[in-house]
Length: 142
Image 1: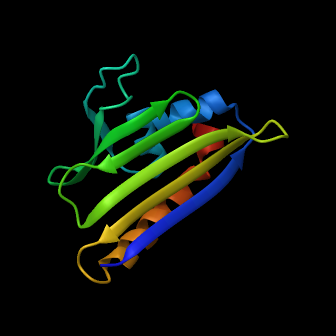
Image 2: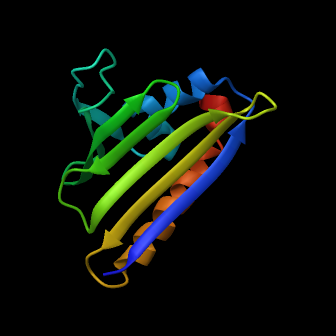
Image 3: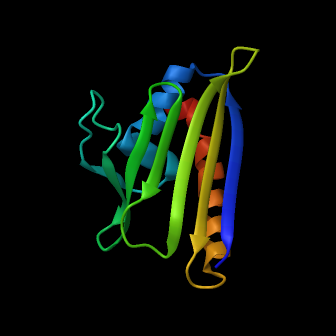
């Protein structure tokens, strides 16, 4: 079993609250990734996208469910895959910080292990390309 880490750091001239809101809203997060995302379970928190909420990414049986583990407005979102998937020990963390210049820094890290040898490399490359492509759209979507 191999372990993989994807780390993406991007800076935007967009207020942190707006960048966080884009990533926090499951449907808008889907627009960012270019994949259908739907909230299928609301959080018990004030924000329905908060801790305990579940989103489904994909269509029909070809989809993953992710559960939000941490939700700190304008600062942090952590999540894990909570349905059957080709990877295990998945953990996603998106941190939002201000730079000294007043810009918004997004640090997006994903860690996981593969189950089937060599599939992790394909999953890792596909995920990273999708996120890197999507994250460039933050200024227009936020």
